[in-house]
Length: 416
Image (cartoon, rainbow, N blue to C red; front, side, top):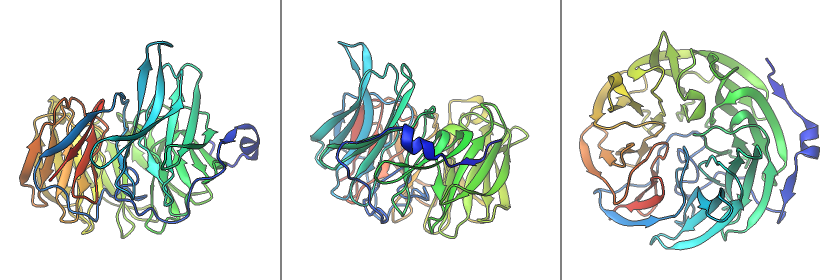
């Protein structure tokens, strides 16, 4: 199997269309929620307290549909960004947009990224330390995939052709040095100016998570669509550090965000052995520390872990026991079960958000938002107006004490 190929010709022949010749940044983002999981480790841990009650502050119809994961991100100025697509009744195809909303829910701007896509996969955006927003688009008609850089004012700075095929539930990650990582049928590292840094060929690569220092990159890969899975560690140049088998192929592992990294460097990842869904804890050197068996179905359930600042791990498992229910789990850092809570609806591809007080927030497939204490008690739940689908759309916590989440087309602000 091909491992790492650094292709200089890609830089020459895959067009990086610099529309403004700027973008990026080289320091750790300080926005309240700049990417999926809030940081390159994808811990889901916020430094701000979340809402104490499930009061819907506002809701707005964005007019944009979402496919898979297009969770919201929040910039330093409390602006909320969300990507999506709008069906064009004239051309009869889908146009891809990135929209920015003010803290009061009014539209700040909406920028057209790509049109005539026929069918699009929308990714969760990511924000650099300078405020540049990155988002991908994909057209199934022309088989074209781009990474776009957009300024805080909505100006398209550049777009880079990526090639390959995207994954329906995947997210962009921005490293501490400003490198942008885009998963797909290969993992692509892109410089802040839009040039390709390197590509790692893996047939299917999940969204990444990074070590606390930012010098190791972790992805789940499979050598074929139904192939066995491995956790792969790469260095900052795309070289392989180690490869750890994760068992059999399972539903959606390669498609979503199966990895989170604790502050002590421990990697938590979804694995499947003998048709059982596990959460595995892995050392930074690639040795499995422990493995926790869940009630998930190997061919249906997904697992998106989050890690608190105290080292506790929270995750959801959907399709428990062939029923339309889900469980939220809390484990300690040694893999010991602390509690579970059954939700009477499915939850797929959703990662918990953790606030500064270790309260937990999750969204379910039927459009309900839940909040739990760290001890497992339900604090509140709410079904926002017109909410119908939070599949793949994880909540984000702002510096204003509010929670933001997007359903199929509506954006919600929940809090005081």
